[in-house]
Image (cartoon, rainbow, N blue to C red; front, side, top):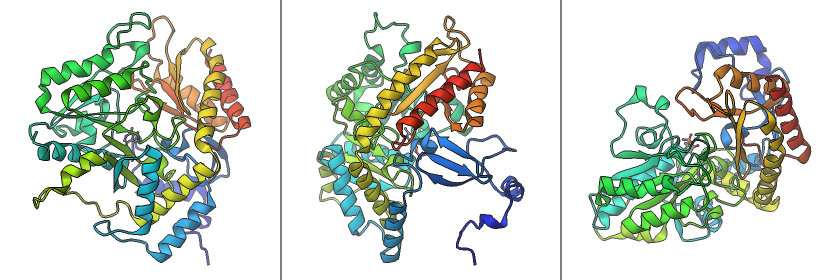
Length: 455
Ligand code: PMP
């Protein structure tokens, strides 16, 4: 009898594809898709049902930080599942307690950890905690949030309202109220018309303007990623995050940092904000927390804020619950994932790989369709243009050609950005931290070959 739960041996490629087309609704994908059916993974590679191997240049969706096929994570999960598969966190269990201590250590101390299942939910929790905090701190009129155009913060009515990409939103509006947006730090196409030489960091100053225009007494928090990832790897100028922090402090506005992608070593440090010397009030995290071996997310809240929820009134605690958040199996998976990162020094390795990748990618700058290459930790973005002078975003067929040429050669890459609505003109890379030096060469060589077909 087969022990393979998906029982794929009973299906050939065609019958699986037929059933996929009949029963599955794929996210973010046009209908009548031709999906790759992925069966297994090992290190930085995945294997499809036909036995073809691909280098997972995006770590799935920016998340499989320790790489695929880690048996010790599977074993830890199985053991915990046998011991205690579930109990809600209205009470407690050892894995959640241990993980909270460990996450606190990675953050540098001073936080309380609230668990959910996805990055989206972690952000929703941050919004609700921010509003309730102000209520209980004697400023009940503070309800607005400021985020950035080009950002992505999740898919629900609140997190999508915070998101600054209209093409993801218009057909689902109206979304939650109270979300304002400011222009992103997008130096290659500076929204304020500045260059590196004339930059006065208006992208950070604009927060202060909007806070004043809206009325500081109405603003609860800002939410931002340390570096905009999915919106096209937009790296802010030096001092940007610090300046936003200072503006928040000046007006009593909370700073929520979305570390869903940048956290857990991806930035080359434990968390993205550690690169910028700022202390956020709330940090949200998911993806790399478990390297996606099991769903888990968290909202870390400064201990001082937590105190505000300890009042004597019956309503002072946080009235929010989700059934699965912080379930013991996911917590054990996170603990094992973090243990692996520590044991194998993967945060340091991520920093090293990021620097090497950035340097090697420089050869692509000679290509007429490469406008700019940006990176943050072990994330890289290659902005493609029609030509370097006009900076017109590269047309969809050019993007598709690079992606297909890479895939044919066994390299999976991402496409993000939407520089202008409808133009996803930024190639993204976000490989697992277990990538070897040879595999790094393979990535760059394959990209060079793919770009050579587009001359
Ligand atoms: N924030 C950021 C920065 C993200 O990249 C994502 C997911 N790509 C989310 C939030 C939402 O996470 P999830 O898909 O787990 O809900």
